[in-house]
Length: 431
Ligand SMILES: C[S@@+](CC[C@H](N)C(=O)[O-])C[C@H]1O[C@@H](n2cnc3c(N)ncnc32)[C@H](O)[C@@H]1O
Image (tube, rainbow, N blue to C red):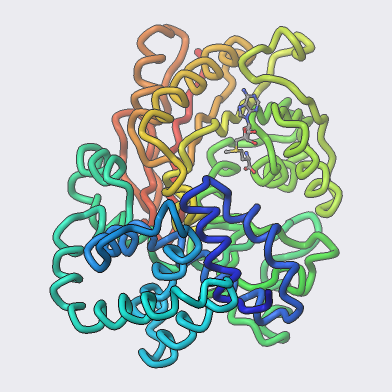
């Protein structure tokens, strides 16, 4: 099958109705398309389809008597994609409807063509009223799960609406220059010579901002390891770590190695990169190799240091804890479809366990960074505040960053603050 929309409908049904990740869906289906432009269209349809599913999936129940969600999942997903093409991609009405109807044939469901045509035409006729109903509720206005809209309204009442809107905006592409291999100025100059728009980040020392995502392997300096892709919010970690040459550093949740590599680019430290998932750990090695850096890689559980610790205290510990990833929905649009409210309590147990297990490994006067890419208090300041109550030798450092807001303990960047991903930082020092 070479109809890109039909392929996208099958893949989107896998993502939204069967729990497949966007990345796995792309891997499973993209190779069926020979042309790079078709693969790019498939990616765009799947990203927008996942991002906007929770806005357009519910409206189909109002446009049809019987849902096709269970019986004909690919046709149901095709209809969602039809609405995305009309409303989000703003394709001309005739072209969007015709291409969607045509895709029913490629899906070998020619008898569905009339129904698909009728549903999309009904949408066009009744659109104003239907859009008003969708806009009335935060979850359908911003295509977020109801539990997340509710939790955000509780955790960040003043910011919740803007945060959910920011989750639906295409983020810029952010690079981190590898100081050991290039200067930021020289890299920006070469990017511009090659026709890219690139700017130095306003306050992050290693950050370069490009307005749109692109195939980074084709950017000058990629193969030579002169930069890595990393959102600016994650680049703050190396600043907060307050690094000095000669320190012993543990990155306790390290894959794919973004923050670990940044630390190694900044200072001559002995870094141990710990990761639980051996397959993901391979990506640490790949990144270290490309960037010309070295670390001691350990496969192990951060919550069980007895299994892997050599008994020597660390001057710096980074806990980039497993979390809900609710701060990075703009970059990972499928997460909102797969994350469940019940995951949060389970993640909190892991976060507490790792923090408690690693604190004893920190040297006196040392610094531990607790980090998540979550915007939920239950994974962030609640974890740290509860734990601090039990630790007389721990002190939270007051943080003041150029964007974001102070949390009860630590600092919260919400998605869109300074055009960054959402990220939480707490810095703890041992007395
Ligand atoms: C948020 S990601 C880390 C991102 C990474 N620090 C970076 O900047 O590229 C969290 C990582 O922790 C790993 N992880 C989860 N639980 C862990 C545990 N108990 N021990 C060690 N690693 C764990 C996950 O497999 C995942 O790779």
